[in-house]
Image 1 (cartoon, rainbow, N blue to C red):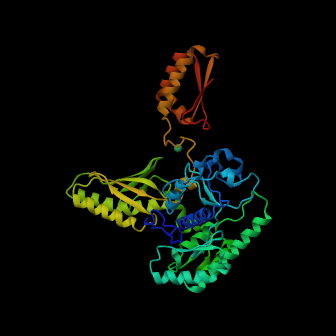
Image 2: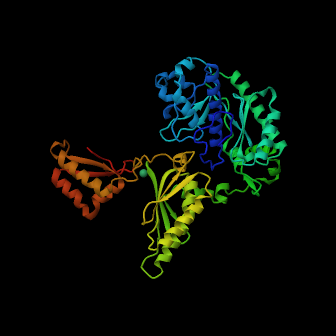
Image 3: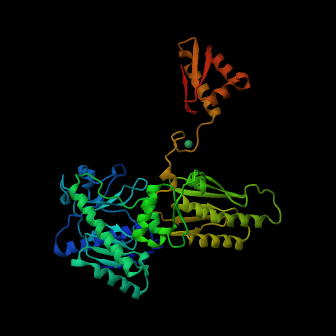
Length: 498
Ligand SMILES: [Zn+2]
């Protein structure tokens, strides 16, 4: 959460376990909006603020939304979904005053500069705002407001005052707001000043580009994925950073020179012939992260199933069979072993919402408690906030986990066109039966002497198995010769009779 001069924010006590850029950005923007909201109410003016949640299909860039007014004229569109942090106060104020219509705030053809505040997730469209927030390493810069806040996760009052003092001393003419990110804790004065200069320079660039561009145009794109990882994940604990292309290597050096000069000498150019991802086993990990079955070192395995409503994770002892005196021990061990891998997979795949884990049944109560404790302990290392609930004695545990992005599966995959994402196709036996039924239906209407049946190769094989028993039956039924044409281009579920 962020400290502010604005009215107290409802739900201000809400947890913020995550030092993620998205959430800090979102908070900064919410703060900016709350500030301007309050200002507007004080002076009776309404700033040209535009905030719309576009349907997912039009979530690309923003000016498009002006043309599709009909959808946004409804006041409901100006409200954001629940569950946001820091937005509660605004929501409260919104109820007490009418929300202006988007058509009163924007005119067709008007040029506006907006930022995508939140990427579309699932069916929810992107959220855009005219309150630009630019994240740096230690600060979020908000050029459209005058407001300085410090992340509430920085607890020491002394440190907060120090940070505020530095920021305020850099604010010439009192223009522009800053939110001090959690990462700023114990950052040196020079580092903070460098960040401020960088952000102000960046904003100047953006303004220049906006003035010289013809809308709709992309003015600025946030740091790329490499730079974001460097900025937010890399600490001095990292010994080497391998890069396999020279241009990227140069970019990383430039980046570190600007943000973390002490890291520059740890960046190494990778020149071996073996692809980088292969060398460090990343490709294999990514492939594994898309499979539903994940093996455990102990010989057991977990199965992860993502559905629309929830994620189900099942644990199996695998090769272990038989009931001995030590069965309970094996089960407890498998459950505990699985926990580490489950939490790792949850993070790798960025699984969110409701996650149900089906642990193997344990007879003893204290073992169940042990497993629950191990799970809670492991989840503590996960940066995304989650809650755990054991809801019965048979080993079912529910986790609710907040996530910021799409899951890995949705990010690097697409729905399977073959099975239409059901995970199943009709078996060859079923398809053969359907062919039989269809033949019986059309037997009387067949025009040619021969019948041409075009099917998937597996279906063809099945039709000809058992000395072509099925085929013979169909020939008797239709009193025609059936020519089976095996065609790999035919979907296994489809067939074509001619
Ligand atoms: Zn499929």
